[in-house]
Image (cartoon, rainbow, N blue to C red; front, side):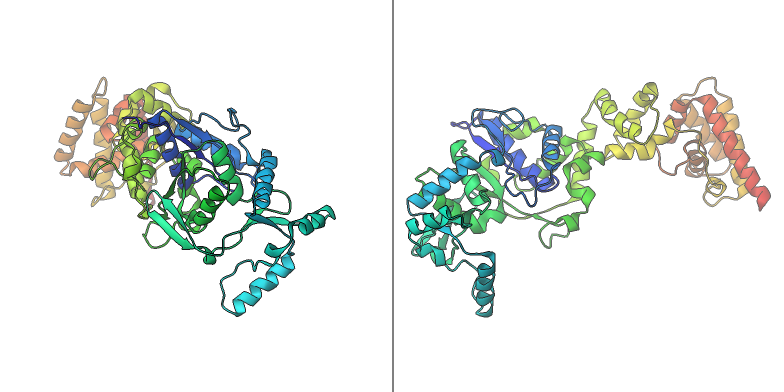
Length: 494
């Protein structure tokens, strides 16, 4: 059911590094609320931190969001009524609003050098005081300050935080957060290079772009009161603030970090490369901060759009559980049609340099579908279908609790069983091989283990009998003969 008012939400990443699951979750919640209410989902690039700017980061953000299916209505690549959507292209707008704050007594020009600020911090540390600006330039006459600017002196613009009273900021998940103004700093809003900091740029853009709900990480809670003060100073109506829960590392002890996760386990495009589906990844991250009820776990993107609600978001930290990711991804793999899974699997086989036979791929897809948690696992258990005949180590062809001679006899007799068929079929071949195992005084697992190595070259593969049928009688006989030759040579060497 749609909320009465369409939401305008923005995902506003900084292109300062790779796109990870934390950003993906924020984008997902933005997207879900916009689609559920018939509103707009906006992509805005907050690229004013030029020291940490990574040229390839914006492309990775866009590629990741497209792969996840989180398409936006306005953004830097498609434009929109509030263009431009890169903050580096909106610097005049921020300067205008910074000057407006100064003109109305809510901001001031600061000329303190980095050297002086360092001395102030050192003095505060010695006195065991919290580090903050000491307010020297706060008392400057504005005309004097403008004269110094006209003379070419370097400056920043700071917010003039009230010294008295308190500020109440309301977060949707946590309720009112009240902070004594005396504990707040006079934060820089506009840097000496003319570029804004987040505290100014994001507030200005959110207001001008008519954002109704701001989803962001809880790391912004310490400066949340400042953002409220900026809105109040400019007489703007605030959006609904939603500070999302943090991710804990898999142990549940401490905040998730790139060092804890490992590069291949936190970045969206790496997870794609590892064979995770966008549906599986979205299902996983959706439930790290939101739940529908106490038992429903499987969600498609369409399900999430229908069922998502702000009321069921929660602030409790969530441990990043990769076993759950595997579980969700496996469920989504099994929900695909054979044709859909074929299309998903093909690139993973080809990336390994395998030449994919389409007919065989169609045949083996049902064999892997019930057994894999990632698309990459299909290559591990079924890549042998597209490789040359295996070259197993002779020792691997010796059956469990069997001698070499017993293993040779088992392989030889298996070849005779396969030879007896005009065409291989699963039911008849399995029945015949189980009868052979009984005749040889073996357990079926002993015989099948030898044949699996001979035919696939692997201890773990798709089901043996079904694999033999797909490979075909002639090629199976060739592989068994090659294995027999290897094992006979092995016995000669001993």
